Length: 245
Image (tube, rainbow, N blue to C red; front, top):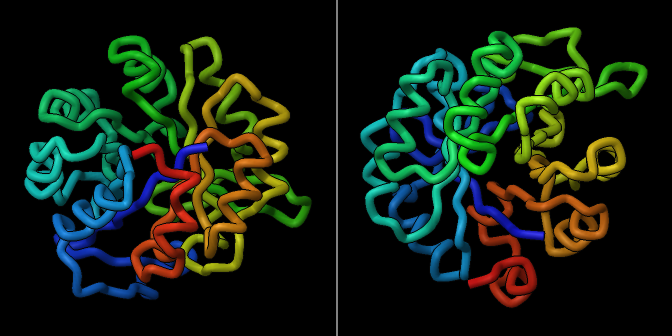
């Protein structure tokens, strides 16, 4: 299992939200370039970047910063937030981003997104499904930067892209995101059981190396961590088994 550090951008600044709430934002006095360098020094080979403004508003808002980071070629970049058109996908991939993450559009325009998977290939397009568990424990997909709920289950959302060659899926448990309460192991256990051929990326709740080990045991391909790494809650030595560099 690969650990992928995450950077959330809002207005050009590094921030973290609590459980997807834009009103519960913590801004960090760290430059994105500085964080990229820190994570590369730890041994990270991939970095996950979310344009939170874009995720909420539907338009990539931190493009110039994203492309500046991509131009450094220090790590592979996986970028999402506001990716809702073919033109944006093409623009990011042409300008140094290695993999584009598509969220809301995968729910709202699945036929178009299936075409993007076919056009750019399954290694360059990752689908992201942010979920909240309902009263029955079914993961229901959220869209528009976690601001809109849907009746669509994670399982139905994923199933709709099987024929399109889907390979990478990032799943965030919104209730755990930024809360440092541990990942939703039951959710990812079920995800891997249902779709073992997919490269699942688990996001939300990671607080220590024990959580990373637990996710590895579940069988996910990657773990996304933002706040725990940003606040240096896990030592470099403890991270080493999950970083290839």
